[in-house]
Figure 1 (cartoon, rainbow, N blue to C red):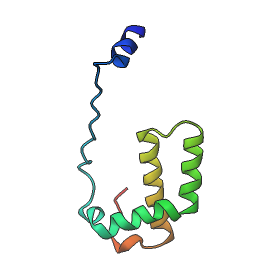
Figure 2 (cartoon, rainbow, N blue to C red):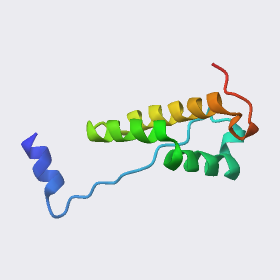
Figure 3 (cartoon, rainbow, N blue to C red):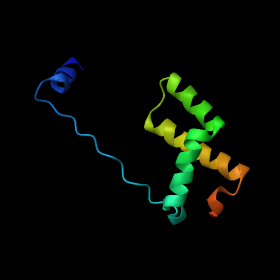
Length: 92
């Protein structure tokens, strides 16, 4: 492990980070600007989401899987409380 760290921390070492491909099962309705905008708004205004996000972050669990789970929960919260942007509900 020490050798790996030395290689990664060396002056000539680089770390390339690539984004993941978008999942294939995202409905087209959820790719619209209107939906994405509303989801982003919910991420900064939904109290339950913000509370859960802060709990995850303070526990040091703000990894991609935990955040994806939290986003799914936000979608569920939004769908349960209103017709979220009037798009069809995702099948269970």
